[in-house]
Length: 458
Image (cartoon, rainbow, N blue to C red):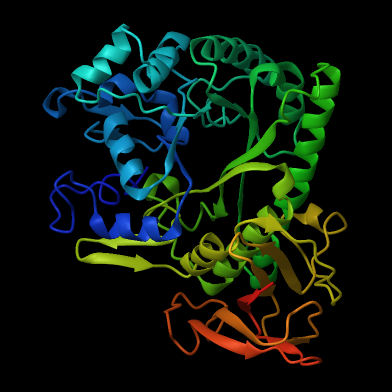
C-alpha cells in the first residue's frame, strides 16, 4: 500500500539503502523500537496477492494489478526479502494468508515454503532460492477483513467461519507448531461472535481492527477508549465460545490480536492516494491513549500491531534524502522502550471529560478521565508510569502515592498547541527528558496537552 514497502522499506536506487536495497535509516529506526513482530503482506492487499509471484529470480517475477488500492505490484520485494528484513530489524514475521482469491493449497504451500524441513516440493523450492534453513514462521492469519464490502471475495460470517475452520484444521496438520489468527471485525460485532462460536477449536488468536479519528481534539484523543470496551467484549466472546465448544482448561486460552490500529482519517489521507497522514500532537496523545489501553488490557492481549511501519499512516516518513519522525513516533518509542514487563494496577481519581465522543457509544460505556494512565514494572526493576493529560488548556497537579523518594526520570511529549505537526527531541515544547525530585508530599504537574512517562527504581 502506498510507499510502505517500495520507497519506504525497500528503495534499491537510493544511496541510503544497503546492498539488498533496504533503507538503512528505516532499519535503524525500527530497530530502536525493538519491535517483536511485523505483519506481512497486508492488509486488504493480501486478497489478490499470490506469494509465488514474489520468490525466485527477480527478473522473472511478474508485475500484477493490485486491486485493493488500485495500483501495481512489481513483486521485487517478496517472502525471502521480508524474512531477511525481519532478521535484520530483530522482529518475528507474521504472515496473513490470502483467503480472497487464494486457495487452501496455496496457503499450505506458503507454510511449507517457510517452515518445511523435509524433502518436499516447496521446502526444496526455498532451498533452491538460496535459503536452506526454514524460517519457522510462527504466526499466520486466516485472511484479512473478509467481512468488508471493499474486499475482493467478501464472505458472510457463516461462509467464513466454515472455511476458516477447515483451513485451520489442515494447516495445523501440516505444521502443529504454528499459531493461527482468526479474522474478527471490531470485537463488538455479530461477526466476531459467530466466527468465534464456530471456529475457535483450532485457532490461537482472534483479530480485531479499529482506527480512530475526530476533527476536534477531545473527541480525537478519547476515541481510542472504544478499543478498551471492544477488547473486553471480544474476550468475553472468546470465553463463551470456549464454554460452548467444551474446550478443556488444559488448552491455552485464545488471546486477542489487535493487528491493525492507529489514528487514521481516510478522508484526510485516502488509501488510494497512499494514506500519508500528517500527524498532529493531538494524534500523538491519542496514540499514547491507545497504548495505555493495551497495557491496561494486557491480560487479554496476544499481539498488537500499529498500521503501518513506514510512510502509510505511519510514525516514520521517508524522502530521498532521509527520514522524518512524526509526532506519533514519540509515544510509540517511549512505550516500546520502557513499558514492558508486568502491568501494575492503578487507582486514579480525577475529573472527567463530559463532551461528545467519537464513536458516540463511548459516552456512558467507558470512563473518559482527564488523565489517561497505565503502569508497568519492568524486568530491570523500574516502575514506569504513563500519563496523558488530555486537557487542551490546563495543567493538572497530582499527588502520586507509591513513588519512592529520590530522583524520578521524566519524559514529556508536548507542543505549543494540539494541532502542531512538529514534535522535536530536546525542543522546549517537544520531546524532552528530565528528572523530578520525588520528595514526600510533593505533587507532580502534568502539563496541558501532554504525554508524560515517569520512571523510578522500585
